[in-house]
Image 1: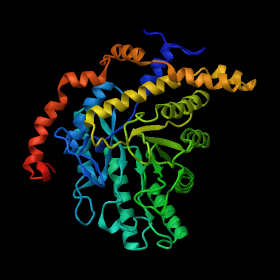
Image 2 (image 1 turned 135 degrees about the horizontal axis):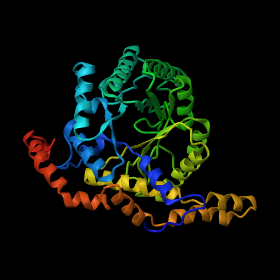
Image 3 (image 1 turned 60 degrees about the vertical axis):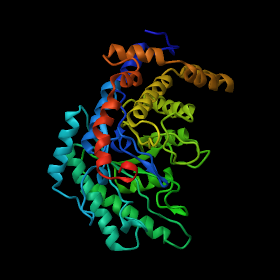
Image 4 (image 1 turned 90 degrees about the vertical axis):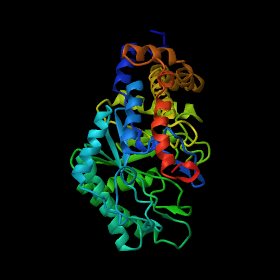
Amino acid sequence: MSRLPLPVGITEDDLAAHLDAFSIETPSWGYADTGTRFGKFLQDAAATTIEEKFADAGHVHRLTGCCPSVAVHVRWDFPFTPEGALAGDVASLAASARAAAAAHGVRIGSINPNLFEDQCYKLGSVCNEDPDVRRRALDHLLTSVRLGAAAGSDLLSLWFADGTNYPGQGHLRRRAAWMREALARTHAAMPPRMSMLVEYKPFEPAFYHTDIADWGMAASFARAAGPRARVLVDTGHHLPGCNIEHLVAFLLDEGLLGGFHFNDRKYADDDLTMGSIDPYQLFRIFAEITSFRRERPAAPPVAYMIDQSHNIKPKVEAMIQTVATAQEHVLKSLLIDHAAADRARARGDVVMAEKAWRDAFAADVRPWLAEYRVRRGLPADPLRAHRDDGYEARAAAARGPKKRHAGRPGGYA
């Protein structure tokens, strides 16, 4: 194996065992055509059905070996009536999706409700002034719980677009009470093996206030919801300058860090590929997690998930690129010489304490990772293997004509 700068007490077998246990969930919507408020740039190879999404996810898992689950979005992956009801029996729809995933070597991961696209949610969902809209939103949450349970999911991932654009538009404390009520009732409906992840976002689509605006609010709502509710950190959902690894460390210590939606950003919620803008931040986040788990190995697991919008990158290539980046930075975080950092801190040596982090981040782990993959029967370079395989061209040939036949603008949907 290629040599790595191993800290005392860590062996290459330890690194390999950690990577063997590492998995990261890919999102069904990351394989489909996506866009911005200004439009979509469509790709022939992008998936159009849940079966095609599972096919792409299975392909990524076969090349990387660490993506066994796929997050599904209830409104984007299952049929609904115009009135907002699931168009079909929960058990049969879940069984069909479960079988389609298994056919491609993956399984259903987190269940993601959608409470932001229907016209009735213009002024909010569970925080709407209209009790009928709040009831409809709660019904959707409870349907999502049943669908997830039947599909074998153990994670309910919640993000709410609820908020206001102008002062006085909403009663802020009353809206918070409605949020607590909806989360508590949803938590009570979950089967024992299911956990709830509560996400937050400071702005967008609401620009005056968002009902779950930051990690502290998410933590408070999670505690109120019940013992199986924790916080979901989306790495793009922070105001500029936020020290994400600090809040990660705090949430870990409080037992409230449930999972991540990984992406990267330059300005706001840009949903760029992981580590493409600030890889050192990604390293620092993993450093806090791996350090915590060294000290408390029995702590609850953290769910690693991807949430990116690959508008101009090929969908599968972007996913493989992100997964490889995740593996690299997890591995780098394991190379930190914590004993050296502790000795430096004890004598007030700021330079050498920081050096323990910088040296680990600077290590080129790619040759070691390539050899690790080959020993596991995986391609040394997953992205190169994908390109050599011709998967993109085959998918485009099969899917592109269907899109053009549907008579979509510009030849697409």
